[in-house]
Image 1 (tube, rainbow, N blue to C red):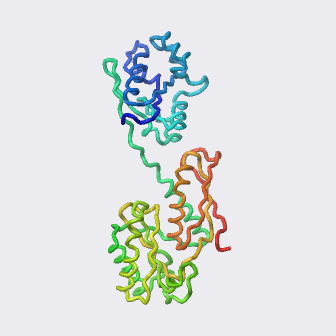
Image 2 (image 1 turned 90 degrees about the horizontal axis):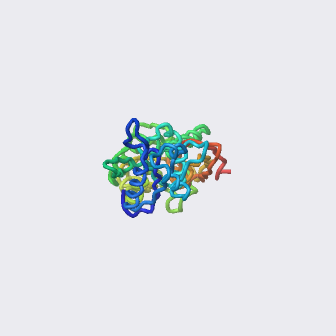
Image 3 (image 1 turned 180 degrees about the vertical axis):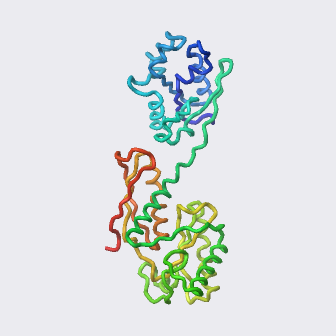
Length: 347
């Protein structure tokens, strides 16, 4: 724990007070006082929360009750489960929790318990503050939502690119992969839409409506799918990739290379979705409305553009669908969401 952080730490007073007591021992007020002093030395703001029974069990009832009356300590409201109260308060206050209780029965409701909880040891009346675990990634809610969105599009007869094994990211690797796939499609006449090849193989004849006049004679669109962390570097290579592919394949016009943030691609790797230009959709025919639980709302809303980018690149649409995110009290648990497609730009 770093000194000086302006962070509250909730002391699970009952857990701390009971630490180290024998079979006949009483919970110790000194344990709580030691915890408060140690946290303050580290620059933290302790908040002492006790369950309703502690004041009847503590070894120094008079001092403990006085601290309650003066507001130094707080008691969980009657009829409320102490553990749940502490976890909910920590979530609301973005606070840590000093406790050796792992709160296992609340894992489904509070998915960040391990990263909030600070363990401790106590020896000779001195408490040693441990460190909380690094936050574990919740099963990737963004990937889960995006997969569901793509499935909804497929129900409306729009095929989507499905990820193959990611390849190590570099400009030359992208160019080589694009050349190999285009050659393979032309030599073998393979026709599945958006599976790294093409929907069909006739020469480009239609005029694209979504790009500048100078670009409208490009035969192919190469969507380069990269992790958001790699986006800037991939964009720098886009022009050279287009020229390299065009020259090697002796194309009349270099392909368009569009780099897209992709939620399924691991850092340091890439995927390609290569499409004939006349198969590209200018706009997504459907926009995406996501209703989600309060726990995940802020995170998903912050990353809604990455959802839109992933969907656009895998469907083969030039412009992103509009992705709206709103919370719902009816979706109570983390990970719960609903998706509704709404008619979009092709009306």
